[in-house]
Length: 433
Ligand SMILES: NC(=O)c1ccc[n+]([C@@H]2O[C@H](COP(=O)([O-])OP(=O)(O)OC[C@H]3O[C@@H](n4cnc5c(N)ncnc54)[C@H](OP(=O)(O)O)[C@@H]3O)[C@@H](O)[C@H]2O)c1
View (cartoon, rainbow, N blue to C red):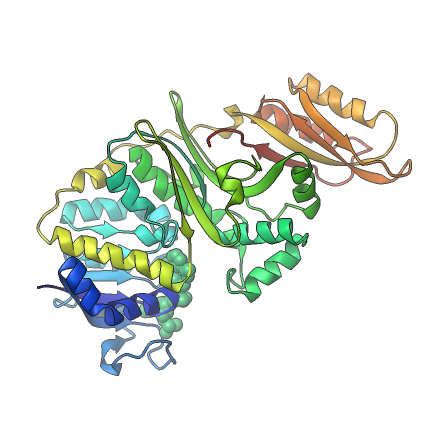
């Protein structure tokens, strides 16, 4: 029986889940994988804190370096989160020839180049299944199941908090603030939810997916990113009227002149397979040149689903064994060249536009004139009528237009006297599935 000695950094939501699986499922893991995991040390910030898992006090330390430098540790599992300290510990572990498992998307999105390069130099594994899609085995699918494919596109819902909020807004007619408060009460959103609702968490995850789906370095801040904090309940209702749902999508598409990559609220036709991914669930729709569409769906966060992915990474490392580095090509490919990310201004797409206008004759013609001057043609339009002079929403759906033209037109429209507040612009995705 092979024994793998594990050093755990962090015993919070995910660390506790990992500790629990490794100690509860000893026999199952031995029988199924022929591996015995031995937890040698666990680093936490505050060893005196009450824990949801019971463990011998002597395993705990407040010194993470004592774990990564311990010669009796074969694999370091980094689950402390944050970037600065996690980066130090992960690099120190790799320098000492230890394999690393991490769920830390921010760390890999920001410092993936140096971490994967160091891993290649030291012939160590860095496994990170839990960093994208929580319990969904999307990295494994890219690494193994879809290896015969060139991946042509990714359409994904990879931030459960945003998806939960949008679902509540849609199904329960809540406004954004109410839905966010409910997400916080249920533990789906942090007290400071900015990373989630501003799209940055999904941007981090898309950067990781891009690296391994398309094979190359990518700077995560080259990925255009917009969150859901400007989505109003009226947008959800109007989208519904036109036959669409609004989802925060992380999208990447390959084309001859580069890769289109963005995180944005998006109108999806109701019959699109991702339109029915609701609540805190995640889904990743991959299109391969051989296999066609593949959909991976499941829990994108939470202690047990995320720990399930971390344990699968540990088993992978155990099976590959130290010394063997057969799969290195994948890691090398992910750092050798840079991916060319296209500017979104050149991308052609349909748009949903929502204006708040003073209800007076001639407003629509002013708006359509500006749109026409920018080569944007209207496919649908709805104006809710109240009494003359009141402020009403005016919704316009466009045919395919360049993003730069749409932004320029909106800038001019927002200066019109009859326009109240900032107008809403949401891309419409009609593509895959
Ligand atoms: N939560 C999820 O659903 C989820 C899903 C996917 C990925 N992830 C990722 O998983 C990682 C862990 O998330 P989490 O939700 O488990 O976080 P968490 O609940 O806040 O736990 C963090 C743990 O790290 C310990 N810690 C923090 N700084 C430390 C330091 N300098 N030295 C030693 N220990 C330290 C804390 O110690 P104390 O307990 O003593 O405070 C705590 O046990 C993050 O990178 C996160 O992005 C989380």
